[in-house]
Length: 243
Ligand SMILES: [Fe+2]
Image: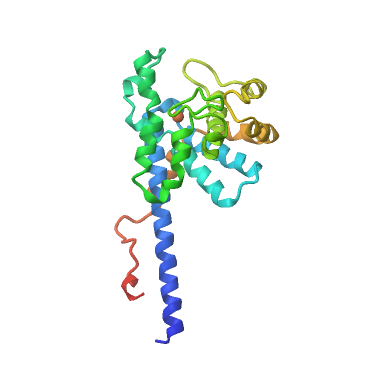
């Protein structure tokens, strides 16, 4: 076999392995997302919607493609730390005690720790840890303020709030777009980065329909993936060792 042909085969095999790894990682992310959604049925589909809103916002801000992908993944995983929150607290219908509130707040740190064990997702950690920080410094877990809050976290904070306000909750119906517009404008510079709110307002009419889409898309996608793949076929290419 000629050298050029061997290099070509090697390249093709590497590409195949890369694609397999990429699909595996995407499947892992989707399963983790489904696990968060399954834990709290009231917010089912929230992670997927936050991911799409954050990606659309990033696009509006002119961020490059790799950042948009990271925003999407960080949106899917932003609440992964809720896996470590007690169900009795997470699903409590009434107001939380101070201790319970502190317990829920820990989900930002727990999420950061969970993601730290996957090197390929390292870039998402600032977004996951910081998505409850506030622009005025009164957020958690680190009390960062202004531009000290990582950009990814500032974008996720807007996306997270947008979907939370738009969605029905057991204790209140979803808010109409006009009311969300007002709350976002009032919170610019306090809860959220004012420049991101400017971008939010520029594309809000495209963001709201994302919030109104069907529930549980991430769960459905994870199930589709599981059904599409043949569990008896090895994902390792037969000719891997020949490269
Ligand atoms: Fe959160």
